[in-house]
Image 1: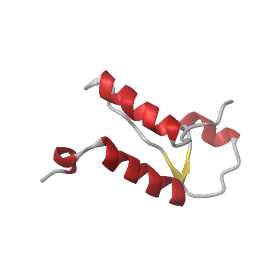
Image 2: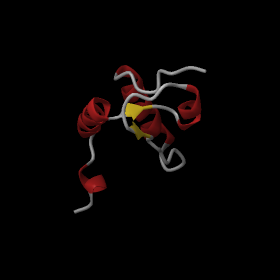
Image 3: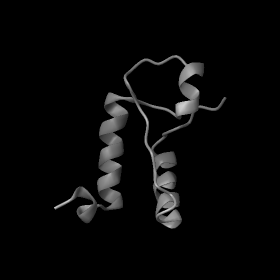
Image 4: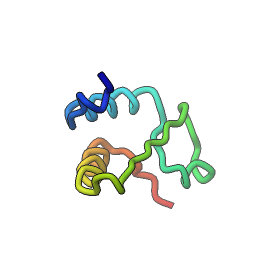
Length: 71
């Protein structure tokens, strides 16, 4: 079974929790502008497939403090 067949927002929160403990999660455009302290991970969303789901995922990411760098 593909992972996408078993996807849930709860599972996505678990993924974000692991990523945030091991990696610096930043916007790709911010990498040259900030001091990196950990390995970097960049998340990508196919928003053209389902904009409503992409919005929900972005809201979860914001709640968990992802992509807070502003330049």
